Image (tube, rainbow, N blue to C red):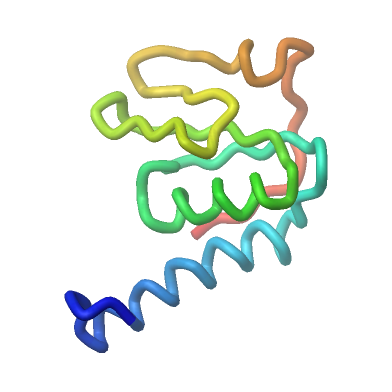
Length: 101
């Protein structure tokens, strides 16, 4: 545990990671080559969900406010100011499984 975190903060960090992991592995489950959209990708759970989905070799699209755009784990990023889904899936998107937090 990093020295700058107290026990309460460290515990909350684990909950964020476990919530994202349950969504990516249990609720979806994300697989190699599948398209995964993470709404709220700039938050704690969304950031972790993007990274877990990428580890499973899924193509990740994250939605986030333009002021907090994080493109590290996404193949494309859709901000609230513009749409970029064509770069993510040129053939279009189809509805599938989802989970809500």
